[in-house]
Amino acid sequence: NAGVTQTPKFQVLKTGQSMTLQCAQDMNHEYMSWYRQDPGMGLRLIHYSVGAGITDQGEVPNGYNVSRSTTEDFPLRLLSAAPSQTSVYFCASSLQGGNEQFFGPGTRLTVL
Amino acid sequence: SQQGEEDPQALSIQEGENATMNCSYKTSINNLQWYRQNSGRGLVHLILIRSNEREKHSGRLRVTLDTSKKSSSLLITASRAADTASYFCATTGDSGYSTLTFGKGTMLLVSP
Image (cartoon, rainbow over all chains, first blue to last red; front, side, top):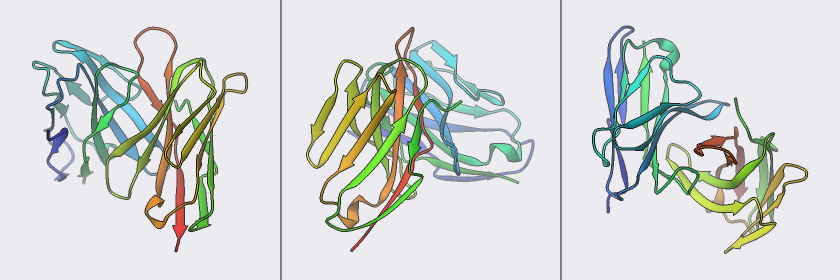
């Protein structure tokens, strides 16, 4: 099993550009989530999904979109990148919400 | 907003010593989890303790939970240089669908 994979590992964007961060898991987990990690802030939940076709907002959803068309994939879209979105983004999955979560290796995003 | 708050923010010890990290939270929980993050990597789940449990062990890890004080502690015994990492507590609420809320973490440095 590859576990949770994320692409790309690094990305530099200009303000106003859009992009999609990819996340996939091969553990047949129903629950998937996206976090951002900023220095001194811990991890903050952006969006999460409890199954294919079902998504909901977390603590910091503004500027981000998600969709869940399959159990395996949970992409995160930045609609119009801003410098405040410079961060490290982690995708995670678990059998159910509230259970042990498995994290991907992260995507380091810089917005200039 | 962060649910858990770890204390101390940073801890420096020698190999062989024990390391204790504390976590306080604000609202009722279903469970509390501890994660480790090595520099530049994703988080790794260490241990989960449910609200009706008081203590749990896993190898060199011991976790306690005091729901009356809304606090938890993580003890790492006989620390090794490889234990150098950031440690985060995360809580799940006791109502509705449970998302994880992370604290800001404790940075542990274990010197040889």
